[in-house]
Length: 294
Length: 260
Image (tube, rainbow over all chains, first blue to last red; front, side):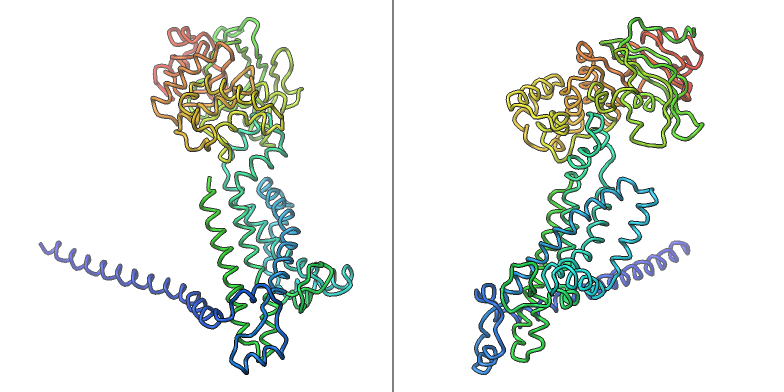
């Protein structure tokens, strides 16, 4: 009898402990989600009023236009088309540079995991991931702005962004390809398929969802970068498609708006736009990795 | 000559003094000599870890994918040493079916069947492709089951169907020999029976070498059987002779269930 009573006591304690930890975990998880929700709430509340057709199609207003509008309590005219086009241009260009190199490096690492050179490359990629983005901006300034385009340019901006993308793509490619069962490769080899065709027609297609996910996450990582662009792309008040010319970008515009007291409202709406972009890419990446899972 | 090892007259494939080591000095297969009869099923049996699969994978030079593996000896196919021709040519003559069904996950059933052509970049006319797909799927008795779903992914099929699809993929390239590495070990009994019936059917046109750890399977479908133990070929003969009258004590012990 006594034994069973002490068991009950223990049980009660255990259940209590379990409850406390359970609630603790829930509360802490909630705290993690909270910042994102608060950010989105604030951005939508402050920024939505500026988002209209002009916002996507017209370039940023000058101080005078904005000042008049603010004084009359109207929406600020113009939009951020120069920034959107510049961001898309530079992200596309950066992806064009980083994706082939990153994917092939990832393939190399997953195919030769033990080799010494692979170890070195892996370590360097990890270190590269930790390099402050402003430093990459300085480097791109030295290499591209000073010596290739002889002036601030989209090319210089995308160079710094592509260096940021590289380690992310390399590691995600490597991790994805490592997960693909050896048996698919063996099946292809057993059909007399040469090695390079096994890589490009079996291995990479089988890991495509993972590769795309990695690329999209890398894009959403660089899309909001500001510091390196200040030293490379500089910014521009008009829509520019020439990669050798200074170019605007959404985060650069946010910085410019910040420096102009009349444009405060545009800060919010540009931030909302950027945030929406990042969210979109993240959700897209998640869906792709789910849908195309093998 | 060792009377536990049968001499095959005019074999299609001859294995000569074949030894294979995964680590220097540690032989997984040791000094195997054997001929393989054309249009027959030859079963390789033995307890696990005795070199069955290792021996099988030497025949289409799969070991070359793993650079640390050392293969010594000769294998002749049509009087040609397979180690002297290109591995890619060789693998087109010797198909392989693996332990677990492994249809290519990114391809449809149709594309899986002609994967050998597709992946090798061989352009075929649509009508030729259709013909190959239909013929190969009929050979593995899968045609009726999948003819309306040819362009769906192969991975949606059941395990047994997937394995038959893999056999069809090997057949589509018209190999001389098909190597099978425990093709039914991941399948249920009904699917296993279907594959076994299929193999018996296929030996009219192909030569099959089958690794199995299931001796009753070897007894049911094979014409010749090899018994391997600790990397050595202990006994090789007609299946009915081996099962009724084994020469070597170790074969007898294995067949009567004393180990394995």
